[in-house]
Length: 226
Image (cartoon, rainbow, N blue to C red; front, side, top):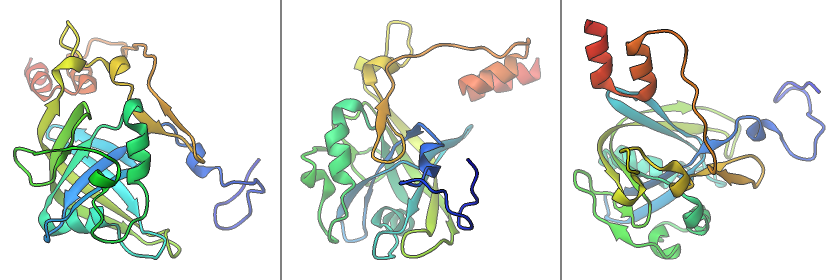
């Protein structure tokens, strides 16, 4: 099949676009407003941008009323947000926290989650989430779209602190992703989680390239000097 988005109809019962870019890690973003109200929401358009320094982004469409999401407004107003890893075991809480709720409703409480204090930023962390990033806000790119929900705010933040539960680090000092079972978004109403893995190492003898794939800035610098 072939179609041009916004120009020609795809002819399917549901739009296939989001089901083509899969799986997508979930940006479970916690923020706090200037009024001290806590907010938690999942975003399936989330990714790391670079590793040295570590920077992440999440993309938030407007809500069904055409308003900017609380996560975006809070991050911009306070300069901080936290990413919490969503897992299969926390799937119900992730889903509940995605509900559109009136201003002031605490999604932590709504989803039955406990808060953990962060060290360098004010937004709380999700207790039970095995990995969290404390982030300072960098900037927002705003992409206009069709109302009410098409417009998107892409929020970038620098990771200034990382929390990893010791129980998910294996005997070799690696994160045990199969134990975590990270949750990922598919299309439609579908999700998946990581339950298998395999390795591929790019051929060649570039130590700097391999260090970059590993995400080790120190190793990249060392390899580049040799």
